[in-house]
Length: 376
Image (cartoon, rainbow, N blue to C red; front, side, top):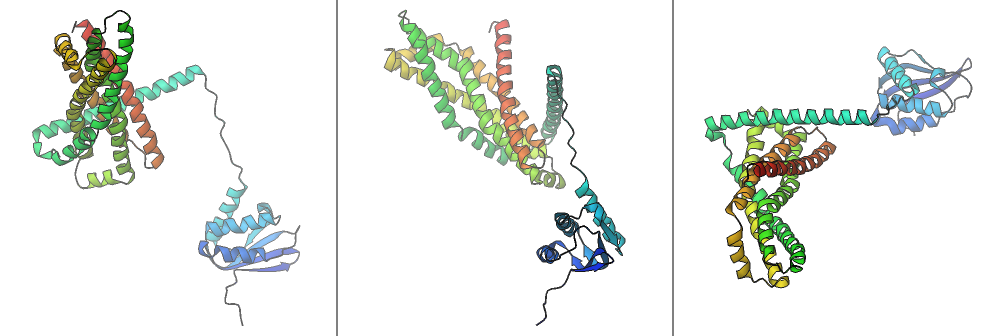
């Protein structure tokens, strides 16, 4: 019975030359059979080799690479293999494969950079980041102005959904962290105050520190790591999957659809979370006062009402929208600038958290110095 498999290559020794006659369709789909037939050949070592292609109908780079790889394994380098009676297209393809296989890999040496070069490069990257942030803020401002002229563009349902994700789902972690910070702060402050019999002043320190400084910073850091990272990952994933391009194709603005609802939700929600943090932090102080410092909850709250100025609570709540705006802008901008690969999403998400935390601390320092100069 005849072998039903086609013959892709035939071998002949002519005038002291190994002649390999290629025929049929040399394609990726037939690669296993091609490899088997080539390995079954026994060309004479030390003699030149000729590839004859008058009967070759189709050829792709995978088959060409496989052919030259097997010939090299038999000791026939690219310079020892000649081409004959080839279609010009096949001849160019085989020549390209042979040249690429023969070309050595060139690795450009990485120049060593000194400390000045490193500082300069880092400064250049920082300036580029600030410029892109500035351009993005301007774009968002224009979209907000368009929203004022046409309120119907506001996506209320998306804003409510983001508010639920940012605020309502974030209440447990915010309350837990600020409560524990209140416990730790009151405990450490109480240890020092007990030495002088001034434990009642722990109430003053806890109330002022929690409401004016600790709760706004802690809540902003938590939201930056939780919701800011989520914003970047969500928008970045949409860009990778070309959903942002689909939004533009529909004639919509990605800033209106993706950025404005998140910006509105976090700016409205962060003051509420800071207030929850104030209550939880003071609750931690009340607990330590009752268990460790012999200050009853009633005495703690009575002292707090007389010593905690309303301005401290208002200042802490006033910081929250500013922190929220910076977190949302950074997170959404980093999501919009993601490249179309998964690795870029992870890198931009990490960068969002780092930038947001740094800016929260910088802004809090600016608030502290400014309010001190204004004697507030």
